[in-house]
Amino acid sequence: MRCLGRAAAMFCGGMLLAGCQSPVNPALNYRIMTMRYGVNHRVPYDPRCKSFSLSPADAVRFFQNATEVGQKQFRQFAMTSSCYYDGSMMINGDILQWRITGAGVGFLSRGLSYADNQLFLCSMYCQQAFGQRFPVYKLDQ
Image (cartoon, rainbow, N blue to C red; front, side):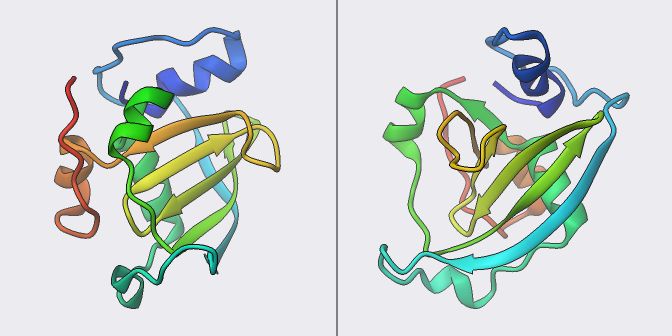
């Protein structure tokens, strides 16, 4: 799936919309509330971390352009990275926790534990928005 507008509907309407490939819903209002850089010392150091940086606008743009995937695709394709940015984001008044890793992997969650995640990978739409800043996942759409 692609587009945060449809992804947010999972939290608001209680249903998951599959196969979303439409443009981002411009009516949605995104706002990064908190943002911090972090390092996961439980995974090997990722050389991409030397140049990995995101602004609040980049974080919003990531979720607008990354592809939402299910658990099966996520386990099949997602790479790990030792660096990430995370924080809280308001989407049309709904507060979600978010994380974006240096490997082009993103998470949105209502909970602080990231247990009930929406999973995102940087694919072709993300590459158009970020160029070579993230690895590009070739997903079977």
